[in-house]
Length: 292
Image: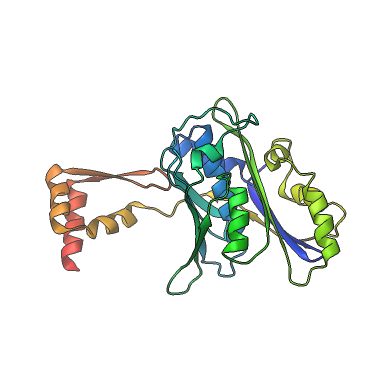
């Protein structure tokens, strides 16, 4: 099953659901993530995709950062409404014992002493950022709180990543449900009853549920109107030419030092792709910088 996101509405609520197993595995491969990092980064990327799906500007993007003081360091994801996401974690090799429930200790990895920050790039001159204190470091509850506190949007967010003993993701996905204006209280009551029976979105994906089936489970007994389906993928917008532009902005003495060394290697934080520049490349970059 290819990664995908489905949008739907039903009787005064909107719901987005996503299957993200492949893109989480791509992140694991690129960053060599141990399970704690894989789960934290996978949940954050899935959450970013779900939130980006609500952007009205097709060229917009959302960046989510968790800085909770835990051993993982900062967990960052950057997603677009076209279904592309990239992300990284400062310390991907964190290894923690399972938590008291026998599950991957994402909270222990992320930490609880800090902020979750969401930055929306909407085509305006300046991006819009908001933040709130981290609740439990499990990602989904923190995004639920953020949406309510910082954006005054009541929501229910569910995120999950299952990782096997070989550090391979065997199921990842998530959902976000939000009431529309003037929704009836009886609808909210029915929705809460349904949500109380949903325990693990990642196990749904592991058992073969697609995004529509996740929505059908969440909205059992509702008349659902499916709106659209978007393919999802891990994709970074870095390139050698983009990195060359960054190098051209260095101080002249720093760039000269690279030329004297005869070689430079630059690694993209988001995708871990490494770009090589030989002396001729660096001299060409220096000439470009001098023309500016």
